[in-house]
Length: 455
Image 1 (cartoon, rainbow, N blue to C red):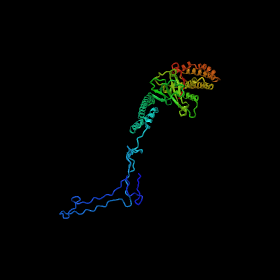
Image 2: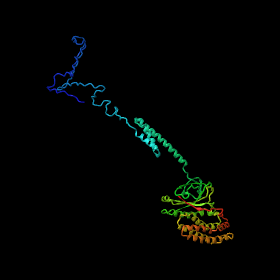
Image 3: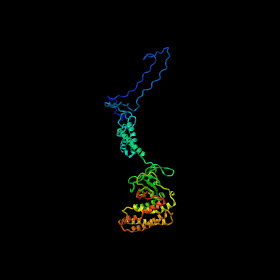
Image 4: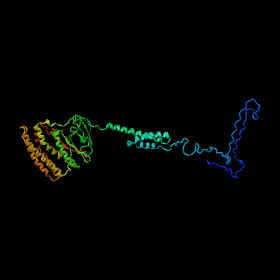
């Protein structure tokens, strides 16, 4: 605030009389002292009343310091209508437009609350599973903030809460349904057999695991991951009997892995079912081997199982070798390799190379010669010997016929010769030998084959 100061006392230009429009501060005159009695009347000297001590002299009147003129009064203009007079202390008056409230608090925020917008967006995107949870939290927080600050966004916050809650309810329902329908692992007894149905990975099947193959599983490539195993007293169409691990290294290829699986599973079958002819008619030897993808992640296990014609089996086909006598086991061990060699040929696709077919025929020749040697290596009981002699003679001739089939130079001629060579194995001689040993005859048993699937 600017203050005007008058001219100095020694200034000759200073007017001796005050201006007409200003008022000069006057000196204060003292009030004359009085004594008791009438005002203005002197007290008689002969009065009997004691005289009061004389009053102290009054202080001299205060005037302006020497050399300074009296301070002139300033004429302040009247403030405009509706405005306050100027503040003489230098502080802004209440209601000044300086951007803060009279109590020093910030002005309330304006615009739309950001968390409310985020709550709506996350509620819309609730199918990402995590977003509805975050959206619900943002919606609740932003709704409280909107009420406290007065910002916009209440509708957005409420919409975000509703959408997020709806998504959470939907996802919760789906998770509950999935949990109810989730595959449960099979329960096994102390001996490892299945006592309660459940899912088992295809490469973790145990011998005597009974199950029903899903449609299209045989011959598929990677469609089978788990199988629903059941107690063997429950109707089924397949039963696992063994497994093995393929050689380490790079993926050997489908054809090589299939050939190895067929041979390995065939050998293992003889210890699970010593007499394959006793199996139900139409039973096939199957196996599941790892495809390229499974091989690349370290899977090497091949699972061997038997598939029956219909899903009506209600018992295990396992047969303990101890239930056979010595002559029966000798015979079954002798003819087993030939049965597998013939089965491998039957399972070979017509599109295979001629070299594959030639190998199959040579395997039959070798298995037949090995069988004849086993049948003639030692005598048989008198009731069995004639039948064994006839069987050995017949198969010796059959080996020569199959050798001619192995010499075929093209697939067409090979297939034609193989069909005629099948009759070289006289089934009547085989039936006679089995009957003499007390074994099930082929007419009562199976005419099986082989198959495979990859996973």
